[in-house]
Image (tube, each protein chain N blue to C red):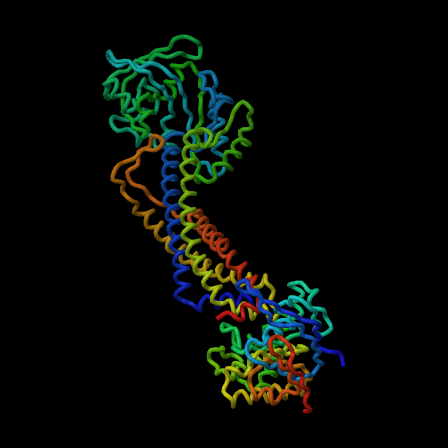
Length: 230
Length: 404
């Protein structure tokens, strides 16, 4: 199976206050389609930096990144925006829904950028809302929802355009363990049903326990890469 | 969707939006009143200047306006006048004769400007009868009568019922003189004119100057001042005579018009001050919004929103506030201008412009007084929003999402 993500000697050095900080030190990694992978490690180990680089939100200081067969380093601003729009879904720790848009508008936003016709957008929003257990909440605004509900909307938003890969940065960190477990179950189910690749950065033992592959980062390097049987 | 986000963003920080809008509304209203006031004042000045004195359009023999000469006359003025009257928008026309001479009353002698007028037409065109401050207006037929400007009468110590001797040169080259009964004193509102003017019945003036039914000028009054350029062109076509030139009031009173235009440049300074008020208010609040929404713009960019779309969201939000402010500002501005156009403001001291004395100034509700502030507020708000919009568009998503 073709890898959905491949990195070669990816290095990232921040030069805050003139002192170079090595966030990533030569990461070589291949992630196959359909994986349910957790990137784990202590704070400052480079998890978020790695997610940002493989999604094209940040550029590596050195090294190469391929995502869904495309060499990211060769892409310009607009091409990269379009590529992210069509290939990656993001789930953030703080949900990051657009507060002035309703649940439906938040979810259909990417499809709107993709110029999906209105009727199809509506149908897909209703279907994904049912999938994430939020039927009947399409017209609500994010501040009217609980944290768990907002994160469900964020997952729906990330998945509705059926991207190749979902990148989730600490998706359960702001949720209590029960809601976190429910969400994780839901993502696991969606991964199994749709074959979408899920990559998490996390501290959460529950996420680690459910992941089929565990990549441990320490000081910007892969310390351990463990594939588990489902 | 971008429009939706921009529009709804307006209501997120209501207090901030209100403050931004207030800066724009105050700027608009001030600008509108400023222009309305200036338009009202200039409209009064132009109206009095043209209606009372020169008319809106004048017809002369070619070259007369630049170098007036007794010999540059209009032949068959009656038929030309009839053609002018046939042009749409013309309200009235009146023929005039001009000559310089000497006027003597008793032992006082003074240089005078002899002005021959057709009394009936002059009354219709310039309300000449209303300028008579004492005595009476001319009889229908010529009767060797004169009406003196109030300043001239004072200098010559002349009064109604007295006699004035006029000495000048006729078109035959001979010295012309005659004795006239002073039947009235006139005040035109222009002190310089009133110190020189000696009005005669047109037939008497033609007799004195040997003009044989010819005149020097036809003054034309139009119904709507703004239509002067079009009517001037129409008259030119209608009379179709290359020996005559048709000039709008702006050409006839060139120096008055230029002085007025120069005065109006003062409007620009007012507009610039208003732009500055708007700019400071908008820049501050928009920068604050962009800073607060850094994370949000980062998320939008992460999802594939293009920088120009983020740029658009910021500019459109400001444009929405500006448009709302313009509507409210227009209501305030138009209402204030309307009130000032009715009640005016009495000046503590009268002032004179172009020889015309004003004691109360009135504003006017004009298209300019709404359109110029609207464009000024919208353009300045959008210009000022460009910098924060560019900042928002350039936000790096990874860094933005780390922002709190």
